[in-house]
Image 1 (tube, rainbow, N blue to C red):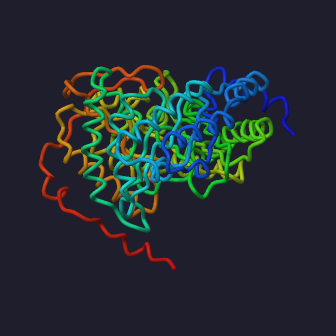
Image 2: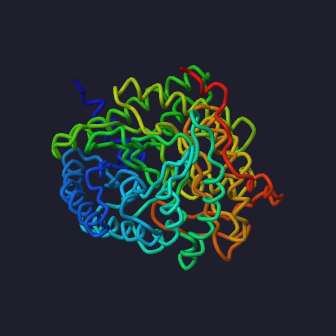
Length: 454
């Protein structure tokens, strides 16, 4: 039973502490749309998504009104398009046509984003995978709501360095293709190691082939709620600190569970998972970096940051798994720079560097996320940064990701404004020493010895 105190407490979280359901994401399998005729394929894709998602936004708004819970985004994820388009697409331009179809139907059903313009290439690339990857710059430049992701490595297979090198080039080309918008296309492009099949958050959402035909996944977020709870136990022991985070994560996850079950019932679609990632926004007080400061750091990036983030991530997960039997996706703490005002402040103060963010990747949910770098950064340097992150994920058996934005025409010390949830960011310096000879080797980095668990 929910008592009056819990109702008031949840209302305070929503009204004063930025608690929200960040997204309801409807996952849709497109495997039954496969066709060798591109026109027929596009028509099948359009019809299936439109039929499945036509009531998604209306349902989200209904739940939001009924329960008084803000639901910020309604999104769609689909089967990785490299798998769906392989029989019909013979060029990057063919895949770009599918991207435009996705964008069209996303506009018509009025979702914020549609994810799944993706390829899974952790061990090797099929011709279709490579064509899709080479189409990404034009696809993101010619669409508004399409998001793209590429899985480049895994603990079981190692790291596909040919694909890593290619993605360094594609990120540069995407930046150039969208330079009139401060290279915004790169904000809709993420590369992964160990990408999960059920992530509801963009830009990395896709509907994995292990999933049902349709599924509802919900992402809930509440950095402000955690920060407010920690203010009440300032100076207490680590035991008290951990218990407070865990209990708060439990309450936040219960909100997501409620919304997910209601959406599942109204849309007649099975409930998949709740992702309880602490996803910040540019709003003051809605910051993961501020939580780290409340734990006892002057700025995110100070000595002790990685330990504090590890503690936060672990307790969030422990609280969440007690609140729902189906916690999934990424579930932990996100550390995007442009979307977190506390992270921006730490970069501006000189407390936070790219290298420190890389170290923090070892213990958080994603990695180098929404980081603006100089537009003249070489493709091989970007590939080297990606390879480092992939290695952290591979060896530590966790998901890691990179979303870098080389802003064409801008350099260190300048700022870039993305707007909305994407926020703004200072251009961060990048290590200028060459890794060309390393990146230009062909083949793949083998899986680590502990991947052999059969």
